[in-house]
Image 1 (cartoon, one colour):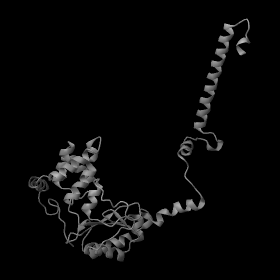
Image 2 (cartoon, helix red, strand yellow; image 1 turned 45 degrees about the vertical axis):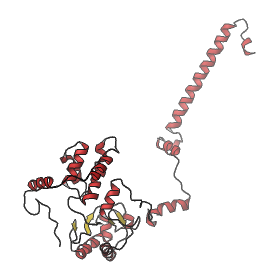
Image 3 (cartoon, helix red, strand yellow; image 1 turned 45 degrees about the horizontal axis):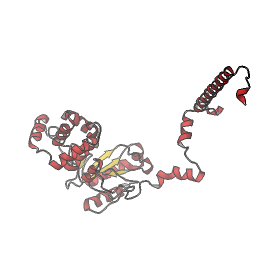
Image 4 (cartoon, helix red, strand yellow; image 1 turned 90 degrees about the vertical axis):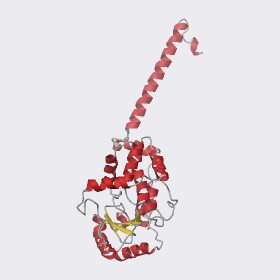
Length: 297
């Protein structure tokens, strides 16, 4: 298997010393990239909210989160490099080692695993001659076992640069990575044609590639419930009905809190109106006490 060593961890060198050397050796980002990082930060009322897409932009340029990427984000946001690094190491979508042209994720969570995800992952490791979170020698494929992708209706599921590949088998998985390595155009099951890792990271940074509407967004398995509802003539309640239902503590009695409140307001209104009329009649009677009915003519 190919080896992806982490300086200061795998080779026994001093990690802090290597990190310091890397920071000094790396040149600043080019002006265009730095300007785009500033542009992302400016999208938000609080600039720090832009850190996640900023890190995606770093990956689109560098192929990973680099030291100079961390320093640039920290400088623009006015926070420490340690704070940026803390975010970059918390989320698994940010990588601290180079990623290949195609990040291939195999779901090995419960349902996908028992439906064949484990077999798919083992076959790909053998076929590509790499382990988890490693990259092929040609730099084309990075393989990683991933957690649930909320696509259990298509188990076992794989993703390529976060696009779905559904109902996979060991054989179809091998064919997929072979096509990707050979440059064959591949379309995701429920989405557009597959782009490279760096291109996908730029989209996640907020720079669309105009492929969002290419390909279906939902498949038959996801639409089963909707189709049953249509066959049965079921419809969702209106916003007003939903709010009334949410405010209804005792539906069996058919009297909602909203109805009670409305009735109470109506009673108060009627009582106030009666008092106004009564006071008006009294005033007229006082003006013409000799002929109390005169004002009614």
